[in-house]
Image (cartoon, rainbow, N blue to C red; front, side, top):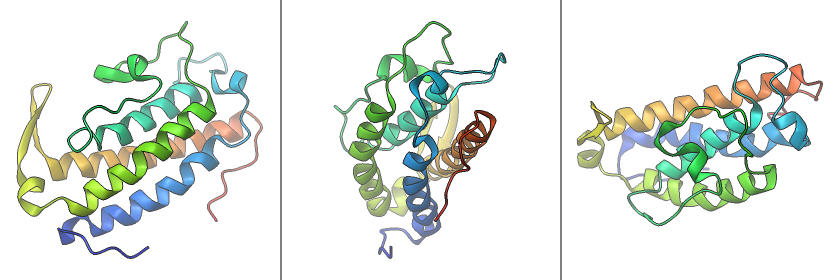
Length: 164
């Protein structure tokens, strides 16, 4: 999908954003709710937490342009909360609904962000960074989480993630 952006610096990020948009639902497709919470007797983050963390990142990209939006699992993920053993996480369909709600808004924000905004700094819990740095990290982390979900699929006996 070709898009003219306010800043040429976001063009590559948009390519990754669009790829990851399609990979998201494929990564959890067909995985049972029980398996979404299966940690295989490890301390690793299970698929339900990883999926919610991914949705929370897309939500973060909408906060300035649409401040009232929240994901279904907001309380489980706000303030960068880690996995909680006894928590009930949203279902796959709830995650997909939120992803589909946030994605067009986040994409529009990414398309329309100016170089001045990209260069502006904000404080992320005591760490100063530019919007460009934070958006770049967010896009990178999306790919990392999708890769973890793809690995969990295989560890839990599901077919590999389809990229086509």
